[in-house]
Image (cartoon, rainbow, N blue to C red):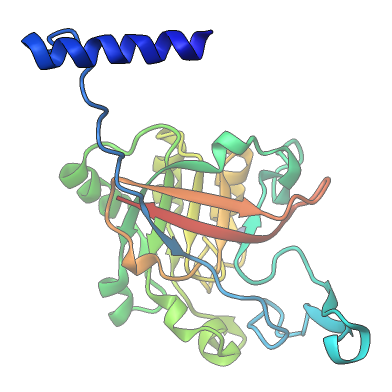
Length: 261
Ligand SMILES: [Zn+2]
């Protein structure tokens, strides 16, 4: 019945439109919003990828092949903090959320990108400063509560070379990160997470994980070893952070996507 009523209403309107114009017709539907461009912001996981210790921590073993078994399958084992991965707040905070408990709506959020690649070119130990964030906010407005902040350093250009990526000299790693003051500003802004294209939000020479000790108790998660962040706009896009959902996990490998309109 409903269907027939709709049909007759439409027919009536059609006749009216022919006769006197259909002044009460519904406005034409808005054109569909343009689909966002989706960019992949992670590395594929391979056994030879860089690791914090230099040891092989990821194993990927073929268990079935199409030629032999009729299907292809493999097993894998890994440390949680390998490749493009999540640090859940529980990684450094005893009461922090584990990977499986971070609400999904904290993982898909509006985002901004602070690009310090130019500064990193002349200082591989560059740390994002409070004044970098203040300069960004003067240009793009205050960093809003709940956004994900991407820190683009261009360091991913060195992936997957263990030597160039971890960049150890005299037993000390050298790569960019954040200052504690910048981290404290992001805590004040109540951001959801920080995504960086280096091995850690703490710069290479850090011995105490000072930024981790500030952000994780504040409930801010990290994505480390991200890729392609220098291609992101400064603002006006969405990040999708999709870590493997390990029960009681301190983190885990993650897919990360940018949705750019
Ligand atoms: Zn970390």
